[in-house]
Amino acid sequence: MASAVVQTDDCAKPEEEQSQCIRVKRSLEMISGAFYLPKDKTLKPLGEDAHFLYPEKQTIGVADGVGGWAEVGVDSGEFARKLMMNAVIAIRTEPKGTIDPKKILAKAYSKTEQKGASTACILTLSGRNLHAANVGDSGFMVIRHGEVIYRSPVQQHRFNYPFQLGHDYISECPNSAEELEVSVKSGDVIIAGTDGLFDNLFPCEILRAVIEGITQGLMPQNLAQKIAEVALVNSRNREIDTPFSCAARLAGFKRIGGKVDDITVIVVYVV
Image (cartoon, rainbow, N blue to C red; front, side):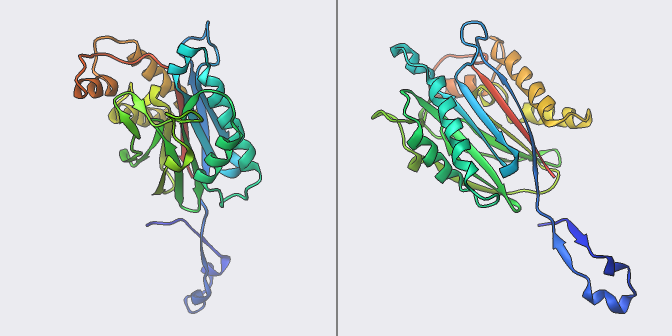
């Protein structure tokens, strides 16, 4: 793995003295920004997605409240928001670089007493490794040198029925979270989001938006907005193929077009 180095001033000394030169690996940092588009700003301005950015602890998270709970009068968006808020509270007590996403998710879950359920994905950067805990169909991807080098797997029981955290008998607990680890390098771009992103944009479409945004010199928040708006356009298009429509057909449903949903996008530049 290539690594950035910091050279001491001794490196400028004569050749016979350069044996004393010390090379130190520089820790990587995450520069992040987010953008959120609720599917119904008028009737439900907070939507059902939630997220957090915790730059001091190099940690981010996304959650998507399961909309099916609305049928029994429960706002799963409240569950998702509380889950993310409790994750932030749990992270505050942890030293930077020692955060365990699965343990944070478990602590947040234990403090979230609302009815409802939510998918969740928490990521943290420690040294040169990205650590994540994921439940359901929120997730992330890593882009390097214009290529997608990693996409987190989806956890689902069947089509459109993702794993979800909740306190009822049909939901999962944090033990079901998949723990993931990816080596990252300076210059990598991490895209995290809810299924409103990944159901409406293929990886190649996200990659195209990232390349365009970096070429334009966009900051993470502006790039997150750009990606979210492209996903929004696709979600309302009834005549195109999307990841959601392809998955639906594989499951035996006749479907074309996007999926109208809340859309959360987090963009991270690794530096």
